[in-house]
Length: 369
Image (cartoon, rainbow, N blue to C red; front, side, top):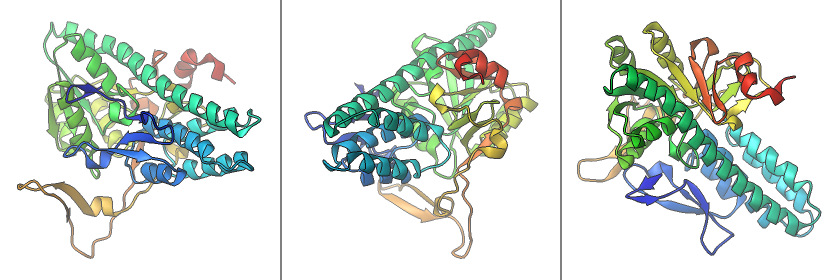
């Protein structure tokens, strides 16, 4: 997508320097646009852990390039053992998003087939590039399938404005390009459909306020930032036509893990007869899990993310302030799981399907046991 009129992906190999991968530092948005270099496995681990980069697809793509850097920095003797150790380090950084383990496993399969360190480096670079390109293409195709859904609502409203609500950031910043939940929005906007997006702030890290709002502004999409708890009110009064969110892991029965608070939006949508869509590339499916509510691991993060907030002061300084009494403890679950029964449809690069095992397997017959 574009930043100040210039096209960017969220990560890329540094020009004229194959020893570095560059990423957008999402911790500094929306107040500063900065790019950082990643050159070691530890730097990749830290970037994923501290959310320099975040979002299911981008975590996977970053881990893919992390495995390339592991191969590049491996010793001449024991290269395979080195990259296998790196794989364990990267996989352990964040437990909920399935794209991370999927990308690392894909790299390991390719690397174990190599006979020399030079072959490993070349293979890892090629595979990392494939993972990134496939992620961008999958999101583009999600946009095409989602566009049809938005166009249908627009036609029903006789060209009136289509109001969407989204939660967290499942935009191009969370993937390599286009995004998952935002891909249909960008496609519809480019097609000239009148639309407007309600952007949940998404506490505690405020990815909606900091990232989604910034993205939509850069692309010229009409939007308003709202408090997390405003969504139900808007739905009750007919100000939401559909909800689209992303996902970090979707089980084979259609349960979807996404940023904490997504489940409540799905409940409100069902109560008000509003379609609730989950958009995801196929790398986000976990076909080994048959019950997402019971079995998807939920990351619990630093309670400081709840107790403190960072923002820009009136005089332009970036400051972090405490929101609660000094002695107040906090808990910080990063995700919740929306049961399949609350999801109208899933949108992926292969099409639109019911959020059920039968529906998913129609698009992915090769996963049929």
